[in-house]
Length: 487
Ligand SMILES: [Zn+2]
Image (tube, rainbow, N blue to C red; front, top):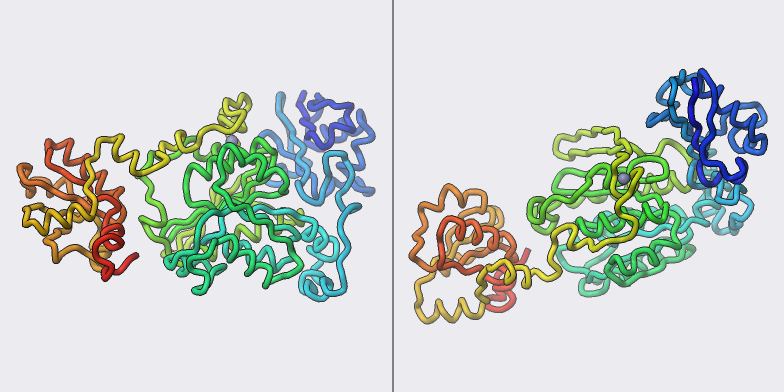
């Protein structure tokens, strides 16, 4: 059988620069043996002294890891492609030398601090040195970033970069354990840096106080070995994915919503990327954010810890990573499921003929307008400010106020004393008939997004005298009635 063996870039120094070698073989083993006979310098990088394939070298037959088939004895068919995939950390670097030669030494204090790692053969002194030499970038110091940062620092990951531009808010404390009550109002970066340096003064924390964008992402990500995605929005998620693919870096992915979580490792050099899985984002508004939909506080603790675990495994080059696998967790049912992910050869960023070869405008790609106010105006949603609404009500004008939030939100805070009625957005289509289209209607929700949708729905049904309460009940609380609880 004539098959093609693909040689990864780091090993092409031993194949005179050749990226593909043809072989006539019956099994994967035959094909690889033929390749090392042709290129003897390659042999020590693939096989050990006893002639076994080195454990950090993976061979894929087409899209399947041969370990999931019959190993090296797997039969091949005419036209098959065998891809050699070296592990990304602690294995072989671009110049073909092992990284261990330049690993940093451990001090007496470090030997003591990490003793529970050092006595495990899977880590040992060598592994601990790899952790010390590693550079990991956390995107986000929030719910996922909290357990992630704490465990990476405690494990002795030498350099931890953090990107965040938020300020600690009281509503963060329910799940973002990096920050404490005393940190409310401080920058998340400052608070995270202080906490991580307290956990382990031996690690270096590199703060990046910015919003990741197409203009800065390549420069920010470039100096790191591994990027961990702890973002909560689609534009940043696609930005991080594409930048990682373009830079050839692994992206440890996690996401959470209410009671459900997802984890995977995207590494386009070995497997699929985020876009192979989700080619395009859902339209804005379809998938609510944690701020709108809520999240159980312990869930990011679980998912962020798994991201930390996968990151540490990548650094050590041990175990089976989540590359090519998507782990799904349902906390209410207490169920784990695993999906096999395949590389999509039509993927716009990591496929055979990529159309995305540099970073794009991700806000536009995800349909997210830069400023919500502008969006409302642009969409022709008429808004009324809390101050104006209060003034009109005080003048005794008759305005019908409809709250389109959910009943459990109404229970936290509502405008019932002003005559507000609750009609959740989902029930609005059926209950529209109860509304009088000749009467002026003010719609409100928590911060203004859902009520803008409600307004468009009513506009579509022929209602004309409509207002969206600018900034929702949150802005009403700020501007008019500070006694209302915030959530
Ligand atoms: Zn892809």
